[in-house]
Image (cartoon, rainbow over all chains, first blue to last red; front, side, top):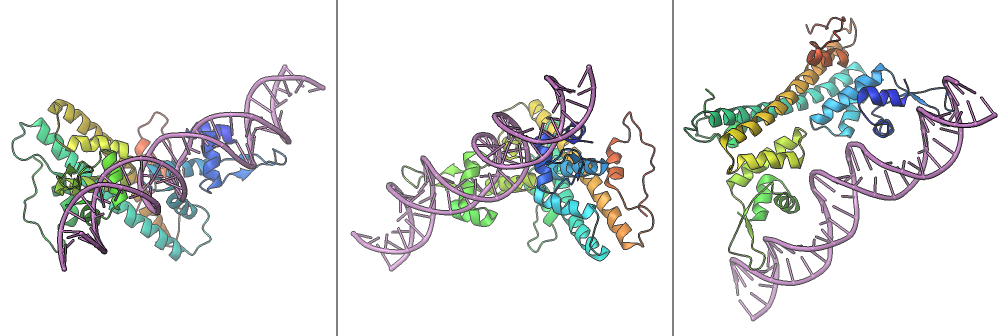
Length: 149
Length: 149
DNA sequence: CTTGACTGTGGAGTGTGGTCCACAGTTACA
DNA sequence: TGTAACTGTGGACCACACTCCACAGTCAAG
C-alpha cells in the first residue's frame, strides 16, 4: 500500500509517517513508481511496527529507544545470543515500568476506596505505596502499610 | 529545606525544580528570608510529589497531566464525589497502560524463549500479542495464539 | 564589613516529536 | 491529452521539557 492508505489505517498523518521513516522506525520498500522520487510501499510488517511504536511511546519510551527495539524485531543480522541480551534488557526495563505502574494503581485504588468510604483513618499517602518497591532496602521503615479492604 | 538541598535529594537540577514550581507541579512555601525575592522552602510533601512526577513521567504522562493528578493529591477543595471521578479516570488510564505493558512483556518473553530454544516453529510475532487486547472485537481472527511453553 | 555561597528573575537556547506548507514530479482515469 | 489526485523534498514552524546564563539581591561565617 502507498503512504496515504498506510496513514489512514494507522491513524498517523502522512507527515508523521515520513518522519518515522526518516528515523528508520518504518522501513517501507521503494516502488518502481514515482520516477526520480520513488514511492514508498508499506506492508503489514510496517503496520505491526507502527503498533509497537504507538504502544511503546505511550509507555514513555523515546523514538530512539523504540528504533533500537524495532531493529531487533526486524531481520536480525545478529547472533541469537546478542538478540537474547537485547530483548532481556528490554524485558528488565518493561518489568520495572510494570512495577511502578502497579504502585501507582494500588495507590489510586486505595485513594478511591478511602474517598468512597467514610474517610475514617488516614488519607492514603503515595509514600506508603512507593515503599512497596523499596521495602527491602537498608533503611527499613516502621510505619505499617495501610490495608486495601 | 532550600532549593539546593531539595535538588540534591531528588536528583533534579535547580533549574528543573524552578521549572516544575512555575508549572505548579511543586508548591514550595515561601520563607521569610530572601527579601524582595523570598526563598522557596521545600518539605517532604514536595519530595513525594517529585516521586509521583518522576514515575508518572516514565509512564508517558505529560507534565500537564501530572499537574492535574497532583492537584488531586493536594488539599482538595473539591467534593469527594468529584475526587472519586477524577481518580477513577486516572485508574482507567493506568489500567489501560498496564494492559499494554503486559502485552509488550509477554511478547518479549515469548521472543526470548523462542531465541533460547532451537527456534523451531514460527518466530513470535507482535501482532499475535497485540490481539490479546482485541480478541473480543467484531472481526475475530482465526490464527491461533502461540503458546509460551 | 567583607566575601563567598546561596537565592530568584528573565530570557535565550536545545533536543525531541511532530505539523504545515509550497513546490514539483508522477499516476490514473476520462 | 488533460487534469485531479497522488507522490517526495526541503524548510519553516510548533509545543514540550528542560538547560544555560547573566545579573542582582541575600545570607552567614569570620
